[in-house]
Amino acid sequence: RYVRQLQRLQLLFSPTSADSRGARQFVEEAAVDFARQHPDVVLYVSPRSGRAPVLLAEYLNGTVREELINSKTSEEIVQLATKLAGQSGLDIIRIRKPFHTDNPSIQGQWHPLTNKPSALTVQGPRLQPK
Amino acid sequence: VAKTSLTSPPWPEVKLPDPVEEAKYHAEVVQKVNQLIAEGHYGRLFAVVHFASKQWKVTSEDLIMMDNALEAECGDRIRMEKVLLVGADDFTLIGRPILGKDLVRVEATVIEKTESWPKINMRFWRRHNYQRKKIIVTPQTVLRINSIEIFPCLS
Image (tube, rainbow over all chains, first blue to last red; front, side, top):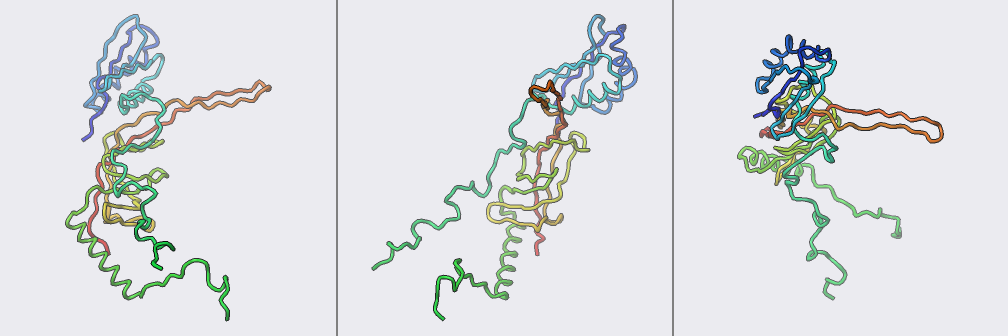
């Protein structure tokens, strides 16, 4: 019952420039393995000249993340791609709490009057008949 | 001997019950709880789990985030051991310090493996022309607890 949050991975590189050598090696060697290991991610490879090599990741909630792969080896690109595949589209900002529950209390939330004898049964000096 | 303010301790004196009666009462309670579990008369279960050097109070379908990277891949089911406490509406099972593995079962799935937001680590001494800036990005894992189950094998 697990849905991967990554929708599409678009790899843009240019077939001539020296920066995208790693991208070209990745496309030749590791792209097919990556696609087989992550069958629910669609990988688009589009060679375009005149653009810096970029890895575009689109998630199910619509966020798009661009990662530059200028002069990176194909192993680093593989690691980047697996990292993006494991992320979800939420913004990477400071999260205040490392947990989130919809039902925080089961036995009833504690308030200062739990585990105290009720006011009617308290024995005080005034309640005793004289 | 005369009674002064220091003859007896200031706290109220507690009489311990008879051990035989105590054992009977314990057996009765255990049998009732076993019956409840076997019939399934409990609603949501919560558990206190020791995981990643922290203790979490956990119910089903809730999210937990660790500041480390687990070895499991995204989408793997994980069974958590080291359960300290299990409770429902009417009863709680307290472990000393952990409960047996044949008693409780806590299952979780790895949802996400991301990195944290870039934390800045800066050191600065005034009037000494010394400052160092370092950006720390730690890997994080998000788990979702799928279910907590108990089995009636108390004793």
